[in-house]
Length: 143
Image (cartoon, rainbow, N blue to C red):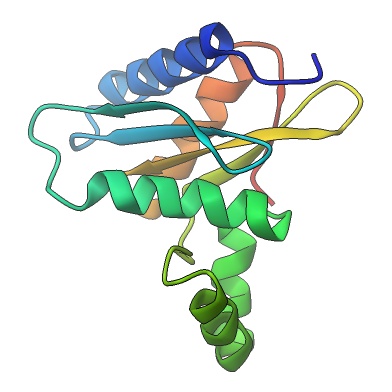
């Protein structure tokens, strides 16, 4: 697979949601973006708070934009806060440096998109994202 399709993104989203329901996660919002950072799917569960879509998209977008999972971006924010602040200024505030944004790679290790989840703790968000990607046989790069 060289590009993420709507069908595959929808399955990833539904599988990530199922993973969240299996562990009784708080209401999740799940965004899947293509390799260019464009939104393919967005699902906001009933009860998810108002800014969750923007946060989920920001986690995934940051992963695609910087070529690494949002967990690693969060680490960078702690170790190099001035750099991440400057990058976020360039990104017009759209970068969310918190775990939950996972790169989606194909079998050739090429980035074909990213998934971002927001709603529970960042670790739970990331766990659900990984499960969604693995469910379709793609590689989840969480850092």
